[in-house]
Length: 252
Image: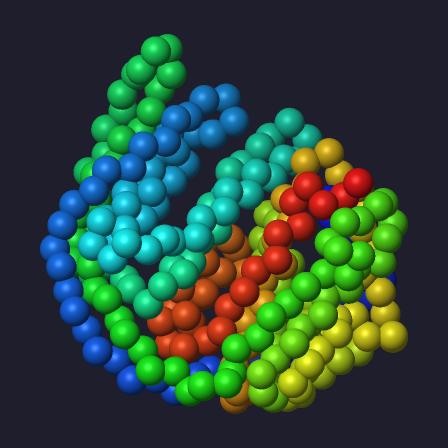
């Protein structure tokens, strides 16, 4: 599924941040992550995903929480590439991380096995209250080919929002040429000045990513998948509100 704007978007944007206080606790440890590889994924790509899984497990072992990881497979002709978009869904990071990888074969399949070691840091933040938001699709998130897609955002306070569409890369779709992205409590995207329509594809991969804060901030217009994941992890650690809406398998 592909979501298209009927006009070019501006490259100028603004976003949001929250003031927070930090208290740190740390634990050292190790964990294992495993991922297979074959015709659609290279050994290096498999090992990168195995490292992510090991990092996820390392943090879960100490904090009992989860890192959100989405695999986005994009194909141009017959050439396919697997990208992993990730961000931490809790206030925690791994410091001084190191990885050891090796290739193993099990029951006819080849796997990359990664061991992660490092110091897990738990960050307890005291956020300013009343600045969260929720977001939903119109049509209960179920679309037919050429439907008009709409995102409704409901905030607890006036905030600045940035919205990205993720597939093989992350492209900012709000603010744009028609909407400047000023502070608002509730938001509907798109406005009446333009539309976002659905186009059926064989392997839909899209994810909508929404970032908010109470003060203006800058983000790039386009990111590759790794860079947007790194940016979101850093932003969450600094108090940004972040949510995703999954568009995969929503086209009827």
